[in-house]
Each structure stands twice: as structure tokens, then as C-alpha cells.
Image (cartoon, rainbow, N blue to C red; front, side, top):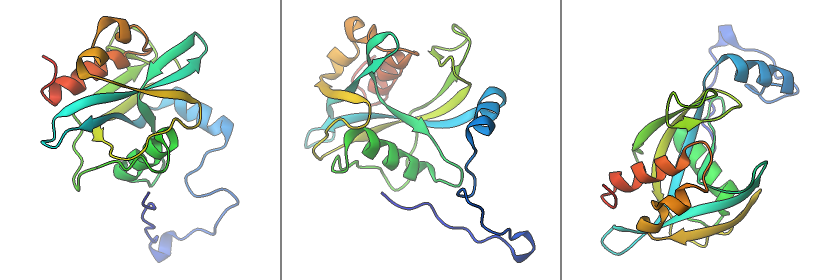
Length: 190
């Protein structure tokens, strides 16, 4: 994972260091921000490709949530002063392990922007915690992926299986629709 660039402040804006890293909010400040501002997220759909670059399988995480077992993709917040590329790498490592070996292009382009709203039905995506704007990417991985953190397993499904209704019903928040969009973007689903 690459480190976030350290941008020096102009001399007239320099502030002494604090106990918390710059840009970090305490729990109450974050709750207030989450309630009043859209947050920037990244979603990554991990895929395996064949020698010609065609997607042959999609990695879906299995997690234990408040409603039981659910499917999900790699997802998480972009931190203050963190490049999107670094956020993608950090979340892929967090969920798939340090040797997933993601292949992120020099100039990553999202296949869509997903708007997660706390109110269901306005967009296909819903997150009752907050309003989040997520840049969504298809990311080929070539290494050994092992579930990390709260992920229980990673299942590699064919694009057709991943886009099926049975698997789609296992997602929360609309991420099943995001899988279909991702596979349409790579030419595997219409």
C-alpha cells in the first residue's frame, strides 16, 4: 500500500501537531459529520481475469451482519488527505489480505458512482447510517485472497452466478445491483 502524500502547509497556515492525526475526528464529531455531510467512499469489485483480460470470476465476501449472513464487496471510506488509489489499496488489503495483489491502473476510472442514501427507494443503494457517495471500481486481483477483519469468507463465482437473483438477494444496501453494473461494464452482463 502506498502512503498518503504529505503536503506541507504554507508557513502562514502551519499549525502545531495535535495528539490525534490531522483530519481525524473523535467519535462525536464523526457522528455529527456523518449526520450532516455526504461521505466519500470507494467500492471495489474484486475479479479474476484470464490471459486475455476477460473477467472469469467475481470475489464476493460473506459477512455476519445484524440481519444474519450477507454478501458484500470491498468497500470503505476515503480518509482525509488520502488519494482514492490509496483508499482502494487500503480497503482491498483490509478485506482480502496483504497478498491479494490488486492491479489498479495508473489512472483508475470508476465504472459508476453509487449514491447510498439513508432513505430507501430514492436510488438503488441504501445505507441507513448516512449519505455516502461511492466511486465504484472493478479491480483485478492476482494474489492469494484470504478474508480479513469481519469477512468470514470470499467466494469466487462466475459473473453469471454473481449476477443471479439468488446471490443478489444475499446483498444488503443494493450492492447486488452494483455487481450487475460492474459485469455490464466489463461486457459480461447486459
